Length: 147
Ligand code: HEM
Image 1 (cartoon, rainbow, N blue to C red):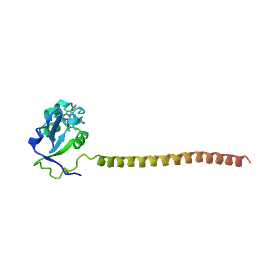
Image 2: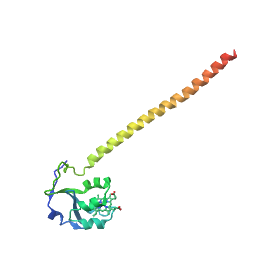
Image 3: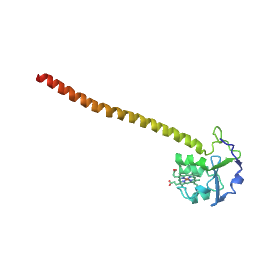
Image 4: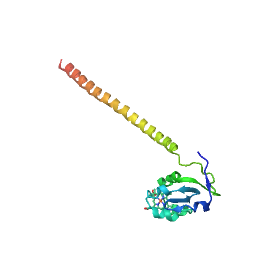
């Protein structure tokens, strides 16, 4: 968690070039200069939205959950006077937080793997044992019958 820097709309509007490109989405001030070349929708649309509130443009495209999650990565502050209601604006992009959820995924994966391995080991032991018992049982019974 960290205290967010507060920007006015007029401050944001000064960052509207290819080498310094900011805009606002949902009250969050984003510096997307480094993202321009990576943007799947091309850099031109982002430069057109530079210095402005791009919330409507961003929503109109129907961006995916992945795109929404990326917003935090480029956040440099919040817009002055924006009403965030119950939203946690202090949640800046936090690689440590990401790591935590990945660790959880990994743990779940390992547990699943462990379960499977135990089951396979049990079968590996049990099936040959069953075959051996059946074989000797059969031999024993047929020998009894012959006598
Ligand atoms: C930091 C802000 C933004 C991020 C992280 C972002 C991310 C993405 C991503 C990941 C995609 C691929 C499709 C998807 O996953 O939804 C995409 C597509 C696109 N984005 Fe953005 N975007 C941002 C801002 C914007 C803005 C402000 C506009 C418009 C002014 C825009 C216009 C588009 C368009 C036109 C596409 C292509 C949609 C398609 O091919 O169907 N994006 N964006």
